[in-house]
Length: 289
Image (tube, rainbow, N blue to C red; front, side, top):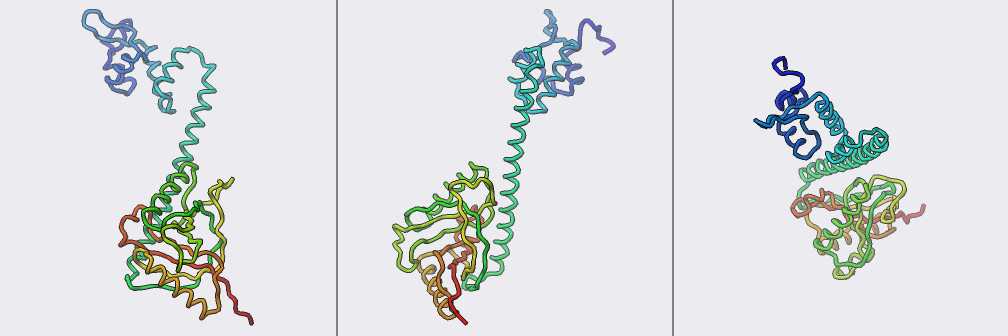
């Protein structure tokens, strides 16, 4: 700087070094009229910046650190007034808080998916494809997003419906919290697979208020058959009959519609070899002492 007369100003290189930015950035600011050098040498085209220009560049950098756009910053610099700044700052704070909420939802979703992936890998390692585990389980009430309608029973229809429901979950800022499920509101042994009363569900973290596409699945006892492999008509009917036989032998009766839980991450649904299915029937004990 000592070789530069003060009145002449600072070169682009010197200004870039002082402001810890690039020469290309300063040229861009000049091009869009955000911060222009106070003097341009008519003979050689060299640009020279005054201390006021350097201050303006620092203000630009400060506002950029708070995510103001260059267009917004240009309007602030031109206004020459701080009267509008509190309102602009409050608006930018609200945007930042919304971004934080969105990222927290993303982190929660990733954590949940990691738990499912780890659990699924452990289950697949433990399972033989011929193995079926039948047991009585007790579940609490489960908060779910749902969509119920008459539809075909099959992979293609189910995937499309689950994708649409997950889009709705995302749009409402909700977080998945469990394995996706299908509920059959008809007799699994006799229902028409081309036109059935089928409900799809995605478990969620609880939220208030509860959106109109959410509900609570009643808790209670469920007889469950967990098996590895892609669910099909024959396997579902065979296992359903096996569970009904178990109920008859142990003094239980059905207490609601049958459901399937898919113990697999949604991203793996294209690989049918990875499927682990939990077929469940809500039951109640009818034995009396």
